[in-house]
Length: 89
Image (tube, rainbow, N blue to C red):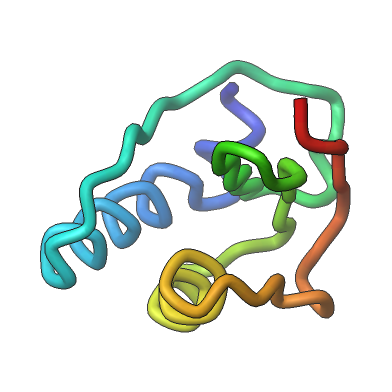
C-alpha cells in the first residue's frame, strides 16, 4: 500500500530481488496492499513450505543481505526484527 511505499518498501523490494538474483535463489516475490501495520512498514513476509510464516518489520535495504542469509539460507529467524508469526499451514 501507499504507507509501505512511503516508508521505503519499493526500495526494499528491489534490494530483495537483487540479493536473490545475486545468490541465485529462486523465490516468488509479490507486493500486497496495506495490512494495517503501518507503523512497522516496510514489512517483509517470508513463507516457506512446512514452516511458520514470519513477518519482519521496519525493514531497510541494508538489512536485506542478512535477512536472506540468516532466514532463507541458514533457516534461522532473525528474532529481533520479527513483528508477527503465523503457524505453518
